Structures are given as structure tokens and as C-alpha cells.
Length: 471
Image (cartoon, rainbow, N blue to C red; front, side):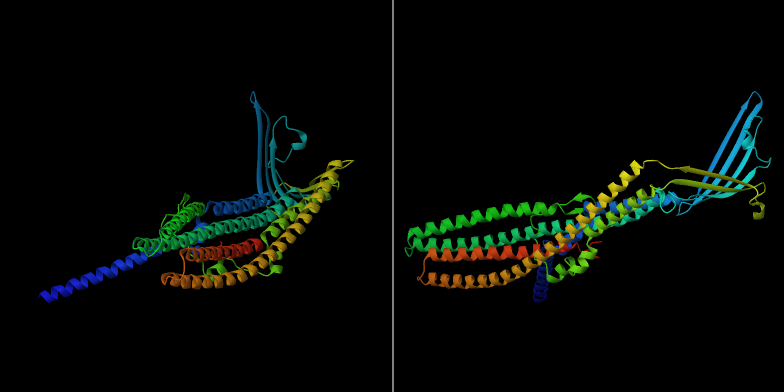
């Protein structure tokens, strides 16, 4: 029985140890905020992303409003006057209008007027008068008018807001990525200084014991203590940099419009190449210059100016509006409407100097030249930025390979020097000198790694690449 109880206790202890270990591993995993998870929060919850979506919605709403200019319309006018039991007039006018694209408007109308003092030209049959007709502009307003221009511009505004949304999100991802990589650099620096502080403290304890037993001079103990204090100073500076980097990263973390703060036990990790390729997709230069959101935004803006120029050019034409209506007393049959009963209207006007119209046209032409120059400049700027970033990435990859080899060499030299120190063939000064060189080269390797990550983010930003992961 005692043996069974012992076995049971062993089993319970084993299970408890296993569960505890598993919980510790889960907790350890929870301390890591990966680059993929971080950008997931940024793209889903950051207020600027929601603001960008609102801008796109505004463009779509403006397009809906512009299309409303072509909606069919019903108009009803009723006017009546009665005084001292005398009906002066009783007028009813109901109209149904259908606007079309080329300034042509179809209209159906019903009039019913009566009264002792009715204007003679408003006299209609007792059962009312029906009319069906069309109104249009023959010169100014035929090929383009205010309503057509508004709809065309609204469509281009949708394209422009879509491109601007991509630019805003692109820049947000770029700035958020730089903040994460700065946090990563600070975290790695903290680890470097922390590990070398531990080494310095261990070495100081060993030297101190040797001094106490008379194997080392007292000056070695002081030198070892100075190194420990120097490492502590570097570590404290690294902690401050780490705190500032965390706060900057926290600026990009939101959930349900509530800002989050990165906790002290959360650390970043270097993103894998697969993750980088997912978010920082590359594209060929020709494709970039055709689809870059900055250039698409400028193109949409240019198209809006072209619409205005066409409208101002059309304003130079004389204004000639014509309206023709077929009249019928009975609207139940279409053949009741014939050319013998009609009502027609024509209006002609033409400014003599056209100064306003010519001024607007010249201004539109100047704006068009300005946007063309801006497009050329932006295109060249994008091209140069891409070329510069490619050169930077290539150089940093070479530097990274070199500095990784240097880290290995300095580690080998430090191990050898430390071994010689244990055998009494070296000095504390040489050990500290080797270690300081190793710290410097490790910090340089860390800085180059982060620069390479930033360069990849810069390439993404320069190309203005949009992918499904951003949406």
C-alpha cells in the first residue's frame, strides 16, 4: 500500500511539473509580440486606417450625390385665390421630368386652371391639358454641362480618394514598422549589455577572491569594479532607450478606439523572411510607375482639371435653349399628341467679351500644366528613391555578412584571452579590451540588422505597394 501511495505521489508530482512547465512555456510565448501580430493590430484597429476608410466613403457619397442630378423628378405647383366668395384663380401644374446625359430633358405635364380673373394664356380645357415634350441645349451645355461635369469629377474623386487611402495606410505601415524595428534594436541592445554585465560581475567576484588570497594585486579588483559600474551605466541607458521605444510602439496599438500600452514583459523578435515578404512585397519599377498611388492620385486630379477645362471651353459657345411640347386634351392615347397642337420656347444669349469664360479657361490650362510638371517630378522622385533603396539594401546585406563574421572572430579571441587569463598568461586590461571590442561589434551587427529591416520597409514605402494584407 505504501509503495502504491509513493507511486501515486510521484505521478502527481510529474503531472504537476509537466503542467507547470507547459504553463510557463505559454506565458513565455505571450511575452513575445511578433511583427506579424503587431501589424495585424495596426491595420485592423488604428484610427488612421478607419479615417482612411471614411475618406473613401466620402468620395463614394459625393459620387452618389452627383448621380442624383440625373434622377427623375416630380414637381407639383398649386396656387389658388378666393376673396369675398369670388374665385380669382385656381391653378394646378404637375410635371414629371427625366434628365439625360447630353443635356436633354424629357417632360410630361398636366395643367388644370380656372377662375374669373385667370390670365388668358393659362386658359386650358375644362378637364385640363396634357403635354409631352423635350428641352435641350443646342450649343452651350450640349456636349458638357454643370451636371455632367459634376458626375465626371465625382468619379475621378473616388479614384483619387482610393489612391490617397492607399498612401495613408502605406505611410502608416511604414512608420509603425520603423517604430517596431527601433524597439527591436533597443531590446537587443538591452540583452547585449545585460549579458556582458553578468560576465563583468562574475569576473569581478573571481578577481576579488584572488585579491583576498593574495594571487592578484588590489588594483585588479578596482579595475574589475569599474568595468561592472560601466556595464551598469550602459545597461541603464539601454533601459531608458527601451522604454522610449516601447512608448513609441504603443502609439500604433489600439483596440476598439482604446489605446494600448506595451507591458514591461513583452519583447519583439526579428521577423522571418516569409513575414517580411508578405508585408513588404516587391514589384518591378515599370509596374510601380504605372500603379503607384501617388501617381494615380495626381492622374485623377489631372482628369478633374481636364473636365473643368472642357466645361470652361464649352462656356465660350452661345447659349441656345430650346423646348418643344406636344399638347393634348386627352392623354389616354398617344396619337392624340400631334404637331398641330404644340407649345415651343427658345432662349438665346451670348456675352460680348467672354472675359470670365476666357479667364477660367486660361486658369484651367495653367493648373493642367502645373499638375503635369508635378507628375513628372513625382515620377522621377519615386524612381530615384527606389534606386537608392535598392543600393542601400545591397550594401547592408554585404555589411551584415561581414559583421557577422567579425562577431564570430571577436568571440573566439575573447574566449582565448579569457583562457589565458585563467592560466595567468593575460591581464584584466586585455580581457576588458577584447570584451569591449566584442560589445561594439555586436552593437554594430544589431544596428545593421535593423537598418536592413528599415531599408526593406523603405522599399515598400517608396513603391507604394498595396496588397491584400493591408485591406
